[in-house]
Length: 286
Image (cartoon, rainbow, N blue to C red; front, side):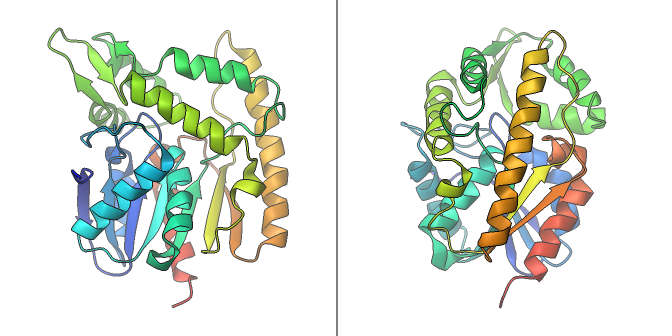
C-alpha cells in the first residue's frame, strides 16, 4: 500500500489527525493546525484520490479507513484523536468505529449527508447536481473564480488560493483536473448516499468512542438562481439540529455543539475550529 500524503505540523502532546472535505486537501487545515500545535502533535492527511494522495478503486469508506490506519502505522502513530471536516468528518467517525482501540475520540465538523430517502425533498436533485460536476476538468480561470467565491465567506484571498491550488492538479493546456477524478468521485458520492440513507442516529449506532459533532451555525451565502437549494439547506439544517439534539440527550458519549460559521468553517474560522477541538481533547478521559 502506498501511504497517504501526510503533512506533519509538529507540536508535542496527544496526536491529532486532521482530515479534509470532499474535493479539498490537507492545505485547508494549515491555519487551524498552527494553533493546535500548542499542546498537540498535529498531522494532516490527503484522503485517497485527493491532493497528493494515491487513488483507490473502488472508493469506499472501509478502504479509506484501511489506508488511513496503514498510513498512521507507517508514521508511528498508534493512537490519536481523529478530526474531520465534511467528508473527513464521516471518515473520522468510521475510523473510530473500526479502530476503537486506537482512537481516544473523534470530531465531526459538519460531516452529515442528506438524510434518509424522502426525508428532505430536494436531496435527489442535490445528488444529481454534485454528480454532474464530479471530477470535472476546470477552465484556466478556475483558481481565480474559487478565490472570488471564497471572498463571499470572508476567507482571505491568499489562503483561498493556496488551498484551491492544493486541491487540484494542473494540466498541460492550462486547465485544471478537479479531484477526485470522475470515477472515484462518483464512487465516493455513492458511499455518501449509502451512509446518509441510514439517518444520523442509526449511522452512529455502535460507535462507542467519545464524539464531538459540530454543526455550522450560519447558512452559506445565497446561491444566485438556486433559491430551491438555499431552501433545501435551511430545511436540512433544521432537521439535523433536532436529530443531533436528541442524540446529545440520549448518548452520553456524544457532545453536540454549533459554531458561528458556515460549512466552510475550517477556512472561514480556523481559530474557532481549533478552540473547539482543543477543548474537546482536554475533556477526554486519560
